[in-house]
Length: 523
Image (cartoon, rainbow, N blue to C red; front, side, top):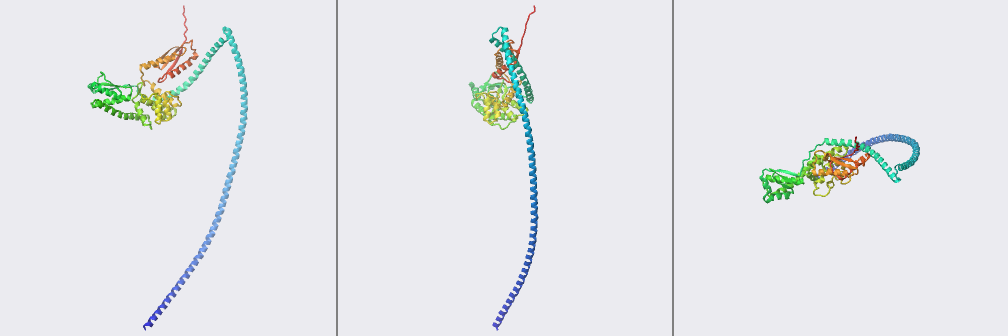
């Protein structure tokens, strides 16, 4: 019973399993058929859609191709029309050029005819001049023979007399022509120069000459003189040896005098002496210590003075060594005029002149400020200070125009540009203004004597006088030796000799006087 039940159960289970599989198969087949029908439907729809889109694409491509063809045709027509217009314009230009060439050919033929006509006129004039020259030679020969007969002179003496007369006449004509040309040129140049220099002078004012070669140091008491001298003069000897300055102690109450031509040394000595007076310890070791310290500090003082000058001249990019050299000029004087003040004055004058002439004012101020740079080392280096200054400027990278303006402003070398001329003019203006410089009596007398000697050496000069402080020379000539027509040439020659042989600030006027006196006595 149990086995039959088990077999029945197994058989029932198998039937149930077969029924489940059959039912699943049928469901799956139904689902698959439904999916196939759906896919077929979508495929038909996609085919229709693709067919419709392809037709749209074909239609659109057809329209675009037609539009492209139309655009290409339109561009071709435009380019063809533009090319045609260009060709027409080119034809017009060529026609105009042909017409112009024809006109120029006509003008050239006309000018050629005019040139031939002028050539014929020139040949005729040349022939006429040749005839006149022969006629003039004939007349001159006749005059020479007539002069020989009248004066009972032989032909050689007559010829010399005639040449002398001709020389006098020609000199007179030449002198007249020279006077006219010089007068016109001088008027034009003087008007322009007066305008420029007057503007420069109006815009600048500078102090009078006050510098000297001595410095007075005030003492707190008279007993300090003895302490400065020291035992057996040891203190004063040490001080003078270390500073290179003469310390003059005389009977002047409450003061001693420092004497030296080198302003830097004199300034070092003054500062060192004032420091010693404040400290009160005056002995050789202390003197040496203070002097050495003052010399080191003096480098800073020189730099500060140079920087002040550059700031006043509104200049930058200057080598540090040049700055120190400018500072040394603060303690250097020339004819009583402080060299640094003079350099600043020249820089200011050149700034105005450059502005009026339309040239670079920065280069002008630079050349003016550095034009006497060589004086800072001229005591240690041989040669003219202008050439020394030019070499220093070149060494420390100054512009070529500035270098040439420095080294040529005293004509130690040939001037090759306008810069040394401008520096020379401003330098002379600064030096020649009233109160700018002092001159020793010996130098003053020597200059006046030299002026008169230069004028007296010329033939026909009777006497010359230097007046107006040596700024004017009046030359009296012998009326029998110097004709009136020769006066301009003589004045010019004397001026040239003065320029070649003398160095002087400003200008010197040369006046030549020819006077004829006739005396008679009534009885």
